[in-house]
Structures are given as C-alpha cells and as structure tokens.
Image (cartoon, rainbow, N blue to C red; front, side):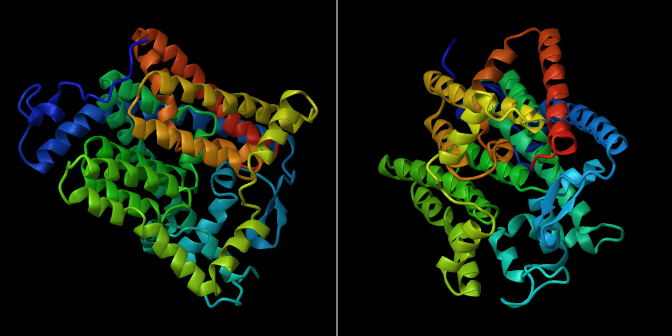
Length: 426
C-alpha cells in the first residue's frame, strides 16, 4: 500500500501555495468552498448515524416490550438507584450524561459541603470538566429546551464539526475520497452511539481534529487555542495538549512560524491547568480532587491491569455470561485498534496523528474502567482509521456502500444491545 503522505492534494485549499486553481479571496468565500468540499462527508456521516440510531430504536422497542421493568444500571447521580432503559433517550442521557445535565441545568452548584435537591454533594460536579455543559447551558433558557435536549443539540453540532474535521485531515494527508471515508468510518465504529449522546466525545473529537489539522497546516495560534478549549472539556485533552506543544516546539527549533509556535505552547495547556486550579481551590487542594476521581468514580491509572484481566477473561471464555457477548466483540476490536496503529506507523502517516492516536489508545486502555466504556473512550483516537479509510476509498462506490451499510447496521446493533439487552454501562 502506498504511504499515507502529509502532503496536501492540489486543490483549492492549497492554491495559495501555488498548486491548483486560484483560491477564493476572503474568509467567508474560502469557508464556503471548504464546506462544499466537505458536504459529501457530512451528508454520509449523518446518513450512517441515522441508520444506526434507527436500529437502536428497534432494539429499545423490543427490550421495552420484552421486559419493561428490568433494572439495568445504578444511577450515581441520584443515590445509586437502579434504573431501566425504556427509550433511546434513556441510553443517550445516562451515566456521565446525567451529571452533565445537572451542570447544564444548574451550573457547578452551591458551596462545597452542600447537597443538591437529589441529595448528591455539589462537589461531585467539579470532577466533570465544564466546557460541554457550559456550551449547552444557554440553550436551556429557550422555551421547551430541557438540559438533556440542550446537551444532545451540542453533541449533534459537535459530531458534524468532528466529521468535517476528520474529512479535512483525510483530504490533507491523502485525497478527497479518503477524507470522506474517514468521516464515514468514524460514524460506524462500535461505540458511535455516544457521538449522539450527552457525552463529551463528540465535542472533544471536534476540537482535537481541528487542532491537529491546524498543526499539520502550521497554524499555531488556532492549534493552541483549540487545544486550550479542549483542556476545558475532559482530562484526556492532556494528550492533545502534549502533541500540539511538541509540534510547536519542533517548529520553534526549526525556526518556522516566528513567535507563533511559542504562543501555541503557552496557550495549549492553559485551559486544563486553569480548570484544575479552580476545582482544587474549591475542594481545598488537588489531593481531594483526584481522590474523588478515584474513590467515587473509580477512575485511576492501573497500568492496563483491569483491561487485561477483563479482555482475557472474556476472550478465553471465563466470563460466559450473556451480557459479555457484545463486550467480547469490543475486546476483539480493541485489539484491532493496536493492529491499526501499527498499520498507521507503517504507512508513514504524519507523526502528529500517529502520536496522538497511540497515546489516546494507551490512556483509554491503561486506566481502570469497565470494558464496555472503553469503546467511547477510544472514539477520539480517530487517526487509527486512516489506513482502512484509504483502503475503503480504493473500492468501487457500490462496494464501499455495501461495506458502510453493513457496518452502520452492526454499529446500531452494538449500541442498542449494550444498554437495552445486556444491561452494560455505556
């Protein structure tokens, strides 16, 4: 397979460098041209996600009829009461989504030590990074828009922005069709349903994709600003911040970009550091912040122990419970992620993309979490899809349509089976 190059195709967005037809003048004109180029990728992304969500709807209806009173998971936001999934909305606004709905509806809350109307300490909200619910909060003041609905609107817009960013990267490193296939493949990965749920994956992926694209184009102020914003969305933004900072450092040593790479190095970590300082000041220190992470939500680095134990138990058949079936699928695909990473290395993709994907895979699998949640934690590691996107782009349109259609059905089945049938976490 030919190497995936970081050289941009000779199209309108590279005309400024002397290749291709003259680029349109003015930012709005250039944005319009870029949107027209990305339109097929965005349309295909939305179509595939619609198919998958329809499959989820069918499974939700089936589960509600078969066992309407089944209690499947403890809701940590209201005293660990067990709840059931009765609709797609239950699944899309569950677990972390219920915390984000609290923040979007009522802010970070009252003083430390106080509890909210559900009896949950306000300090628990400080564990969740604020950008996602902050963006959704203004929408809650519109008539008829609940906090949950506002979050889903933000996720939808963010997912489309992410698909556009993935297209831009695929086009930059290879060609137009590879960009389309990259966005399409991201739409049909097993845990893609969380792209449409009340989670931060879509927002963070959008920020990461455009920040990495800015790095590839050496637009350092944009890259630093987007990395700064990503640092307010989730702690794993540290990976993106590191990649942007390292790329800027390389540019600075190479004397490219003047003062802008230095500005990017300062901007990139600002958001993450600012929120950690704010949360620590509210809680009385960093130790309290990280202890809530570990002791209440079980989030900690465990050197792959939990992931290894669950994967091996499931793959060799020790855990033969019915609920393990969809997670067995994820275990195999999780292993495939590292195979794709190796393919990305062999293909000589831009090192910034490879490094980001590698560290995101390590962070997702090296931390203690339930195997069923690893799928959504891997969603931002989209560069591993570059090689299959290139291969899919080489197929005839009919063959690619069959492959993507089948993957959309399987993604919808997995996204529906996980909460509605197996009762696993999302």
